[in-house]
Length: 241
Image (cartoon, rainbow, N blue to C red; front, side, top):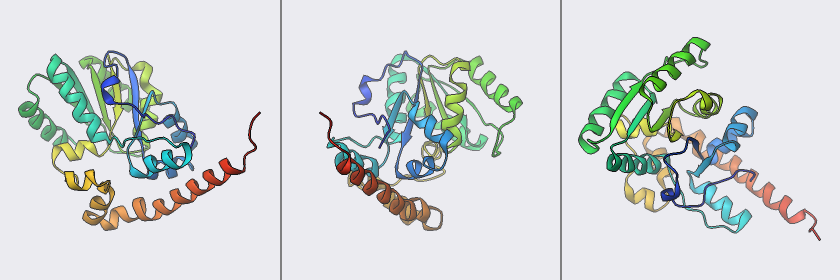
């Protein structure tokens, strides 16, 4: 569907190379269709993880490829394990100060070898030039191996792309949104059984129906329409040669 979706294992990631890592699911796909800047940011990702069964189904139907779902939480856990082994460092940019403190407390127990920094940017629809300068300065002063950004989509993906070259980060710059709350415990992620069945979305829908129905039900239908359209176009396209 026009996106370079990652189809490999996270172990192949080069943690010593600065790269922008984003995720895509049916919701972000639908949003990107109406937001050219967001679409450009997703397509410019160095690594774009398939964070949703809708994307894995689309890869199978349109490309005949078997792609494994990799959620932002999976990426987060993988990188923490790697950094803990190597006495690395990470920085959390986003969320509230309370959430960041809870993340720091949990990391100190589970990954004691990681040096951790964080900054809570102002909560607003659009950052000023001064806001951006402060955020970049906070990250660069710490100079982490890995940067985690949690500002919600599409703000975090656009911000990563815009400021990548200004950030003093040795490795991945990861826009992982809700993972901040999952790890802090302020929002409970659906359990392993739901995830193994490919029904994490249903678990979140049942927990927060008023907030999540549009994301999963409405946009699920919209995404299905896009998928059918792409399938029809691929069948009707003249063969080369």
